[in-house]
Image (cartoon, rainbow, N blue to C red):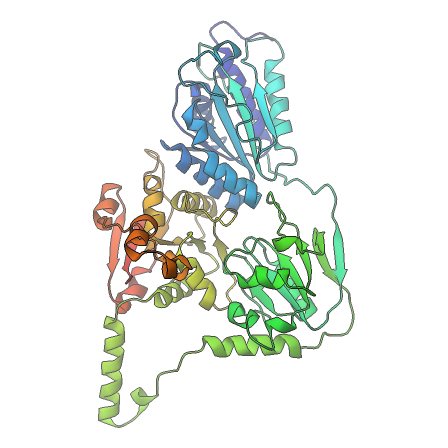
Length: 552
């Protein structure tokens, strides 16, 4: 049926498209303001008003893209991000790249000029159709609606097509002619339940336990990696962002052992889950001659295959039933790893009766409390403060590697944008994760973000939320060493002129983070001594920036 003349075709089509997405389980739409996209934005606002979806408004498209990414990562449901035309679409590229390489279902809906305004120098007009084609091959360029019969049904059919089998980013480019919007007429669009797409086929590899096997869990590996390691009786080399950093087979000090005689040199078979990115030892062992590697495919763009040495790819690993595997191989790894992580314990002088001994112990404890915070002390405190009802997000900085060296087994939800391991969007991603994980108000969890000062400054715009929108419980723990000290551990630190490296790599900064937090309405907690750390990490309502002073 042709809509009345008072109804702009842009609004009719936008409303029908959103209704189709809502009926199929989409719950979150992130909108960036813009003229050409106003029909989509106003329709989304009206849908939220009717309780049909949750709307998030952001002025920065890059922040908006990563917010949608975080919402989708936590919920498993595709999140939608809406932009106007021109550079707005290009600003989504970092989030689209991360979604592609991590396999996160992200739907970009961009507004565009109609055909007659393309290629003629019209304002805010570029080649948007297929702009993400290299990493998001599923894209649609939709001609401007004109109010013809059947357009609403076509919009609903497009929603179904776009969501069918979605596992990474997809892009819908919608052309709109003036009038760009009219009053929104809500259709019958009862929210549906999201049903995750089933895999087209499942390639299962069946393995038997044998000595010389290790299981590697990279970012996003999930709990299946722990199951396979346990059933194989194999050491579990799980990165801190893997979701598998727990269980009796866990080897936290895996880096040291992969390079140690009697351990790494005896590895004959490697089973890889997820995307390993935090060490050089793992790809080195995969590339070594004589090592058989089996990789369990992840939803990301590329299969893990360092040196093109992977023997087989599979969708799932099953372990052949039989007698219990010989525990001696894994036991050596687990025991030695524990020894490597142990520190010399304090003496029991505090329990003695000698006054001088007890006084000396008290002085020692006081000195420890007043000591500057080390990176190890910081990451261990954050790990200890985080529990299963919380979420932990790790930024791309020196601190994630520090935590990966020392984190003991703990079954908690950890996320890091390791698809491309970029510094982009850490705060925005964490905000999306927090919003999605805290929808159930009976769950008291907090989302805690461990990041460096440069990661904070790179995404500083994400400290700003949408007007009138509720903030989740979010705690940014910023290790402030005034620059990119991660380069201190790379080869360049031994070869480059220190003055040049300091300027172009370490990029020193002296931003007043307390003033920055106040400007955006965040609480600020300063930590300069070890004794202040545990108290600063105590959860509280709202947004808190915990600034921890670290030495360079």
